[in-house]
Length: 277
Image (cartoon, one colour):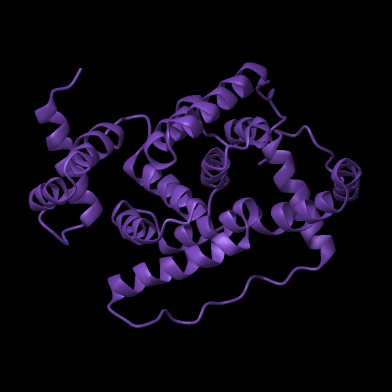
């Protein structure tokens, strides 16, 4: 149990870490309440002082999934603010950009392109510049390399319960999903998931967050077990849904929690030697 005073103190402390010294957190809380009334007080006391202060996820991980939520949702000003907060919570710029790439695969390129522009806006504000330096393009891969890397990703995602033969693994996905399976294997798994700039544990956490925001229960049935195989705990998966209550609303969070618990009930932990490195 907590008191109102404790929640307000926690909320002010969250404003301190999110702001990284850019503003006085107590005055920021007062301004939020003064300008937004009940909405502002709930934002400080409930969103920051209650939800963000829960111990099941670190502030760094909460920032990671909130960036994923807001990029998927297409939230402009809120995304810029939380990108800056994520930096202050220890998420790197490369990791933030990888979240945007994951959004491209799971929520679509239009949302990711918009998010990329907003991320740059946040970085520009931090750096006090007009534009970010030019970026390097993705590593060029021919199909044999993409297929090999996709096969490796799928073996970790499914804890070894996939063919180790890249051609056979690809054929199985193509047989199930046709052209969608081709692109999923070649691009989603052979390109996005194979990138080293975000750990597979974090990439799974982000993917679960995106799918929960999109209310994709059928895909959560696949990616929640995959997240567990990548080292995300059941408590952390459930906490994604708890975080979703304020960023996507209770209906999405309820559906996400139901999907997660259904996946837990069917989950078969890998036996020794099943999970590839």
